Each structure stands twice: as structure tokens, then as C-alpha cells.
Length: 79
Image (cartoon, rainbow, N blue to C red):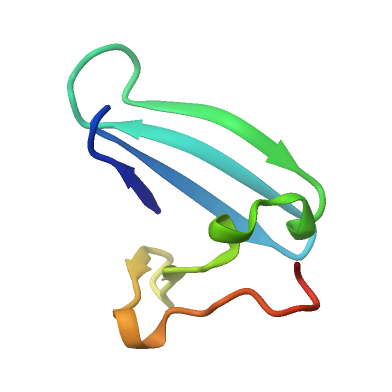
């Protein structure tokens, strides 16, 4: 998740082995609250900052932010 304070948006990227999706989530009440902005087939298609995972899916299926100390940086293999 990447917030955009100037536009009151967060960019949410969900990726797994076979594909990835990105959505803009708006908190300002204007327009659609969630909008798909991109999708692809390979994680390597994502920009490096989008692969610096800062959240994970918990066992209950909910998306949970990781603490700053456990955030994963993209490996050279993924770049």
C-alpha cells in the first residue's frame, strides 16, 4: 500500500505467483472509492517500490500491514 497524501489515495498492489493487480483506493469521497489501475502476469513487471511488500494476507484472509522492521525488500532475482 502506498499513500498519496496530495490526492487522498492509496495504491494497493496484490501479487502472487501467477499474476498481480493494482487498485487506487480513495478516501476523499469523490468518485469511485476503489478503481483498478493495472494488472499483469509477472511480478517482475511491477516497479521496484511496488515490490517492497509492506503487507501480507493473514490466516483469516484479511490484509494486514507489516511493521517497518519486517517489511521485505525486493530481491535481485525479482528486480
